Length: 149
Image (tube, rainbow, N blue to C red; front, side, top):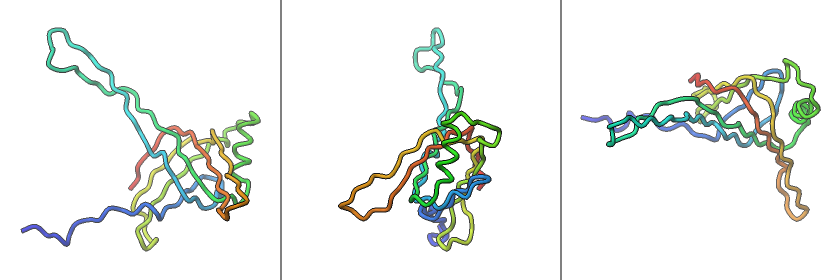
């Protein structure tokens, strides 16, 4: 007999935290770009007309996009160092994306990224007729994701 009350519920996506080494980045309202895609090489075998062999090759990752209400300029300063060509070993940072359970007490998912740096910034949309929070967007290029939990 199946136990209907003993199934795991999916994790909620609203309780998360972004940690970037050596940088207090503030709270982010959105995080996207957790995407890996493996390129496929087709190989057409002579005499085999029913299908094409497919082989995995290189895996690419998309940029991580972070959105937050503007609170300070630490992320901006990090990006301006890149823009101004002041690239040092500390320009590359590692970090984590943590997802918590509904109570906020336990990490249920974690991805780590490495050698990241900001590669795009979008400023807030300013409109005097509205009372929205000023939100800035950063895209981080990185050298891959690792799932820890």
